[in-house]
Image (cartoon, rainbow, N blue to C red; front, top):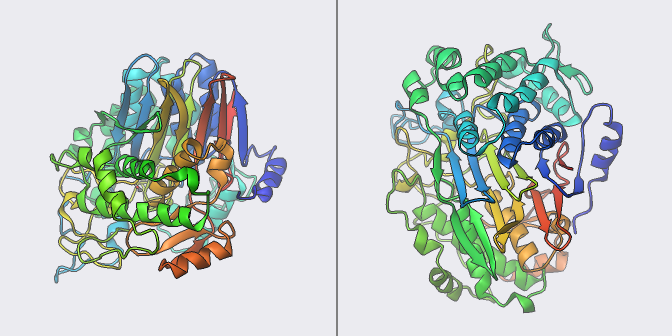
Length: 562
Ligand code: GLY
């Protein structure tokens, strides 16, 4: 078990004044919100107490995160919602960013046709048409109860009155100022006179408050039409960006049928493409069903080998097959998520040695690791799992000073160089090449596991491609190893993504003997400090209680219930 983050708990004690929080586990009877920020989680709970449902609380929490967790919380990015409606079918809302109309498959290449290193993650050309406001608005219009204005107001108040800079944000502020950030970020964590704010100072965001006011007043149109849209386009046009009014007007969120898998009598609902998360999660759970895990001790060499080989296969399939379904009508989703395919895939695992990832066909793509997840449940058992992102931490690090929010750099999630796949990590396969209006492939894996038709586990994480694997292991820990949610989130995670061919594990949480045995089997191992930052809720049907846990790796995160 990973040790708790005691420095975080100390900060919690110090932070009573600053309202910053730390690792938390909460029990509640009526509702729960778990997010990367205590203030945002509390706003969600306040909405539930006022008669809002899980969707209302999600909208208010997500908008608040755009103010208090700006490294990933956003209105300038995109993401996905999985919604288990107690009265109806489970559904999803896709508000992934889209390539602008002016985008081309070769836009990040030089005259010789080679990728200009880093260009797909830098500057305004890396910005996809944002989807967050459209997604939250659609969720509210279809499933919310309270008036939209009530859900936007708490975020406006936070931006206008200011938030106390937490230890984490204060260190971001220092790094941004001392680094080579664009002008927009240089002025980000500053007071009215341009002075850099420090831990405990109050940070007011007037421009963001004004943008949010437009969204409060006009709903989706407050972002995609009118004043805000005009300023986005002026800023883009003057500074070499590609987004135009038509892109904003054309943007719509899409309601999609969730992917459904099963595991030992549980139902697993997750996100279909353009996320690769749901497909890979269900494929891996199906492979686990093939194994007799009763005789495989948790964290043994056998366990880690089996899980790593499963990940290797799912990530190879992800690279080869997945992309935006609206541009790839024949994605083999049913096949990849079928029990028969799992039998086939499981059948070629060698239990004595590591397989070799073949780079001659498909490689893997870098994608950003700063995303944020929130899990919500209300008193009527409606549950929401939402993951959204700017791609990198602070996305493109660019935005209009008049609007006060940061644009994503999500174009970097497309395959940047058509036809070129290599061991260094480029993928050139067709399903995820850039096309105007296409959504880039994602790894976000917002998931709800249900038992007897009720939500049992609401879970998700940031972490780029590691998202898929940390969500997978947390679900497996609960469903197969019977762990309480706290243990399932905190215990050792590994990550394998086919290419590069390496088995990554959390430092100090894998026994040195196991690591050596894995090396002997042919695995190249590498340690990292941490994998995943999971935000989850579990329902205990016997006691009729919700248990919320925010991962100890989230310094400001909190589960709040009532
Ligand atoms: N930007 C991270 C993802 O979508 O997977």
